[in-house]
Length: 521
Image (tube, rainbow, N blue to C red; front, side):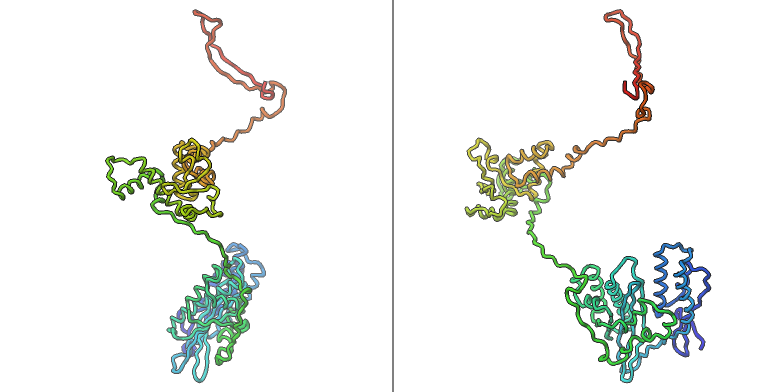
């Protein structure tokens, strides 16, 4: 009957069972430091004592929430709970857990069964090995895992899901450790909401639920999730906690529910689904009307200045057409042709319906923003505003300005060019120069937005900070009779003469000004 120390536990070779060495120390004053040290002495790598240890974890969290110092005595109610817990801990020395799981014989059927549960104070998971043969069925506890609920308030349904995620991690790890890759896995939960979440696709739920559901489904894809009544869930012991005296003889914890040792036909089968409107954490599906955004050519978006864009385009156009030019500089007509080219491109992207209608001699659609401009195509294929100035003695561009889309990058380059030509003029000056050749729908708004982003103008618009004035001295703000308190201002010397003309000597003079601080006289 002598025991040997094995992996931190006591092993009795004659019984082939494990036991725990509990040596509690006498505690005269219960403080956070002392109870945490005593709890850490309970070495339980597989957490077979999870129903007892979860009680200690919950009490430690309670002391932490009270923001007590490490050596401050705990309140009397908490100290009494710790005293009852430590008083019953020596009873756990009589606990025996068989090492052999009953495996190794022929014609055996092995199954992994896991249970998950949560309460407001914690959540837990426990895994069992079910060994079935022709003669008997046996269930042995393998491992458990318990955690306290987070300090931040979390719904009970989410805690149940966290317990299910912890259970999937345990089941996968010990399935690989025990080489049970072909053994069926049954995972049980008493939360129908959690089961519905796991059986649905992760995209149906909100982020918190979706992440954990995707993790659970990935861990053991072939696991069978089933519903277990709350009274038959052994994980309930580790999520709420029980006393050490109860844990010694607690068949639900050590061997699982009684029906697990019977034929699968006797297992519970209550998998009623919840209605769709009763399922929490559903991702809201919103139908939104989207607008197609035309993407402008990458070459246009690469330029920040209009003159560079037009010059590069003109040189490319000259090379493309292989025109033999005697001059090595660009001509004004080439620059204009480059501008017409980009105007045709952006108008074709932003005003495709209007260009098509005008080219077929049809009316512009009524929903178009250009319907009141009565647009037409000129000889260069550029869309222009017709207006009422046909017979005015004005340039052609001013009578029929070229239409430019307000959201185009070319529009930004045009506004920037006019703004620089006016030496960073204001909205009215920039818009006036721009309208000599172009017409921008909602032009004033677009120009104002562009000028608001001008760095140079922003620097010049910056207001000079004025330092705060200091407080007046007490003599200035206290009522008194005239010249009771006087201020003196002194200047000099200055040279003065008594009369005009030559030969008169200049005399030094000084100026003294006496001011009444009360009446300013």
